[in-house]
Length: 214
Image (tube, rainbow, N blue to C red):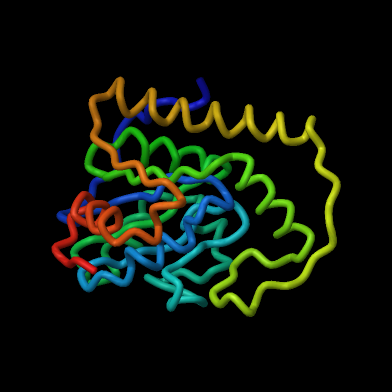
């Protein structure tokens, strides 16, 4: 078990806060933008990525008094940073994406805080693994238009590498589910294939507290 309950939980200060709990190449960029399209939702990206601060996609350079490169200042006072991200928008519903390699304290705060609603995004781990290898080869991590995808050569599939990937991600999701169930928290699970299904998206939006429907 790598997830430890924090001594105290971050306050939410009257906002409806949610997190997209996912792994790389599961479609979280797309889900972030779809949920952000709802009129009463403001959804950031990877706020706690160790290498950068992933603000809402239109706030590319900075937000709430922080710049994309202010990772040291963020990590020195993560709760202060969290409050700045939540309270620097007038939208009543605020979200962000959280992955297993993000700031450990932020992951724990996210998963153990019952006030933060969790949308768990899943994808076939084989598909996610292949997508990750293609992204590494092309150095293209986000494709917004079909014609933007770069061509790539075939790559050699390593079974050992995939099995390590499979074990790491399976344990990650299993512990998330175990923690949420054992602490009695509700959560909403979306599959990658449901991201183009309006009904599933609208149910997810209702779950996070949005009153807007697509």
